[in-house]
Length: 512
Ligand SMILES: *[C@@H]1O[C@H](CO)[C@@H](O)[C@H](O)[C@H]1NC(C)=O
Ligand SMILES: *[C@@H]1O[C@H](CO)[C@@H](O)[C@H](O)[C@H]1NC(C)=O
Ligand SMILES: *[C@@H]1O[C@H](CO)[C@@H](O)[C@H](O)[C@H]1NC(C)=O
Ligand SMILES: *[C@@H]1O[C@H](CO)[C@@H](O)[C@H](O)[C@H]1NC(C)=O
Ligand SMILES: *[C@@H]1O[C@H](CO)[C@@H](O)[C@H](O)[C@H]1NC(C)=O
Ligand SMILES: *[C@@H]1O[C@H](CO)[C@@H](O)[C@H](O)[C@H]1NC(C)=O
Ligand SMILES: *[C@@H]1O[C@H](CO)[C@@H](O)[C@H](O)[C@H]1NC(C)=O
Ligand SMILES: *[C@@H]1O[C@H](CO)[C@@H](O)[C@H](O)[C@H]1NC(C)=O
Ligand SMILES: *[C@@H]1O[C@H](CO)[C@@H](O)[C@H](O)[C@H]1NC(C)=O
Ligand SMILES: *[C@@H]1O[C@H](CO)[C@@H](O)[C@H](O)[C@H]1NC(C)=O
Ligand SMILES: *[C@@H]1O[C@H](CO)[C@@H](O)[C@H](O)[C@H]1NC(C)=O
Ligand SMILES: *[C@@H]1O[C@H](CO)[C@@H](O)[C@H](O)[C@H]1NC(C)=O
Image 1 (cartoon, rainbow, N blue to C red):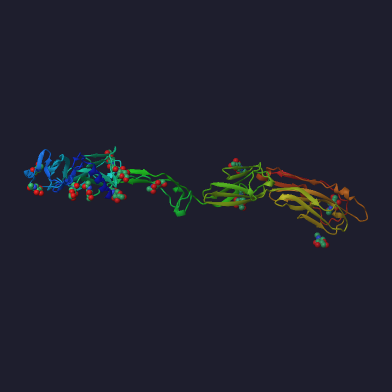
Image 2 (cartoon, rainbow, N blue to C red):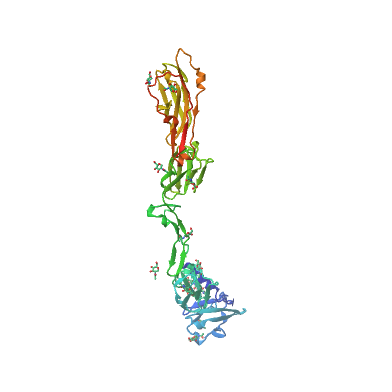
């Protein structure tokens, strides 16, 4: 409003510059219809009165004073001449009073003084009003025309957009003396408010504002996901794996009839991992065979990591990983492969670990007997048998083809000569079904007679180790036949005192 007024004032000052001269003002006088205007001269009242004063409108006389007043009839009652300055008052102005006024004044003994100026008589504006061809528009798709109407004379128009004056451009046209504003392809920023400012030298005013409604968009559409995260657990807010995917949304404006689609947003639903397990292809993890450990779990398994005995697994030459670490494969088990294997299955939401204790089954090997080789009658002796074996071997002591004891340690009290002999220890692995034996010679001597020297007897220890073929233990079935076992057991009450005889024991494996 204030700024609007300022614009209007500027407009008023700019209009209608005309030259004035002499004793009358340079700038034209402006007055409204019906008003009174005063043509003041710059003359100071002289010592002697004026002898001649003439006022003209164009080339028509208004009044002549030469001692008497001669007023033109149409100015009777409409003017007053001021005798001291020569100024003229013109009352009840009409539009046809607009024009050039001139004066000539003569005083005694002085040069005549002349002057001229212009009077503009204006009808003040009234009823200023702005109207729009439409106020409901679609951005880039509509043009609008704003009209300003007002009554009054010599009216100038300008338009205000908010507080700024509208200036013409390629899409803004000002026509009909500025009273019509055309905006081609309106933008959302053209909503205004637009006001028309009308002015003439005697009045100015602004119209009520017009605000345009300009529909636009949709644009800048954003899809945001509440609880945004990279992965979602299945079941969280009841979401399912099948709901994974790229989501986008489309907005529609039913005014502009335009659509816009958002950037896609990825939703990844995962199932939490549970029930991790490691299973071997066989429980008979016998040395030399091939076995695969399979690691799996329920849920969305992203990664699997193997460890052995609490440390990261280093793949030995007989190991391989297949199927993205799902299968840990041993192509020929070694005893050193025994240990606790753990497999950690994970995805970004969860993980689970499973353990498997791999015990490599082997043996028996390296059967050894410890104990004395020579004792005297009446003494006690203990023989200990050991063997490398997993699981631990079971031991059978055999003397002269007869099973005499069923554990690793064999003790005999109060010996006599008949206890001499070849003591055979047979170690057996219940899973590999292999046996292995060692023989220990023991000489029981009478205290009085010398018998064989201890060294000689120790040298006669013979051990025999028979190993079944490696492949047979997995697929085939073996029956162990021992010649000694086939012999009829000797009578238990045999008390004959004979010199010990050491013979080779032998075993035969038959593959059935
Ligand atoms: C003319 O002079 C009178 C009296 O001095 C003054 O009131 C009036 O405003 C003057 N008019 C103009 C247009 O200068
Ligand atoms: C001429 O008219 C003016 C007023 O317009 C008046 O003051 C003056 O006395 C008149 N002079 C004579 C001689 O009538
Ligand atoms: C202006 O017009 C009126 C009639 O409308 C007339 O009486 C008057 O004489 C005119 N004045 C001049 C200066 O022409
Ligand atoms: C109206 O003013 C705004 C800034 O306020 C401008 O972006 C827009 O182009 C103007 N519109 C016209 C028709 O002048
Ligand atoms: C414009 O109007 C204001 C009052 O609304 C007035 O003070 C000002 O003088 C006017 N300007 C012109 C040039 O008529
Ligand atoms: C969409 O996002 C952009 C960039 O962050 C932003 O500038 C714009 O205002 C947003 N749109 C909405 C409708 O929130
Ligand atoms: C257009 O959308 C607006 C806002 O959603 C709604 O109020 C109006 O009913 C819709 N008009 C039509 C014709 O669908
Ligand atoms: C936009 O203008 C085109 C061509 O003038 C017209 O076919 C279309 O209906 C207009 N769209 C709207 C939303 O007014
Ligand atoms: C290994 O032993 C477990 C437990 O006794 C059994 O559930 C599984 O089926 C066995 N696996 C094989 C391959 O025989
Ligand atoms: C172990 O897995 C590998 C790779 O899948 C396969 O080639 C091999 O035959 C499997 N071995 C056993 C003993 O199942
Ligand atoms: C041998 O004697 C010891 C103690 O003298 C006794 O504890 C042990 O049971 C006896 N062993 C046998 C097989 O008689
Ligand atoms: C074992 O056999 C040998 C010779 O065949 C014999 O001398 C010895 O007494 C026997 N020992 C036992 C305990 O039968």
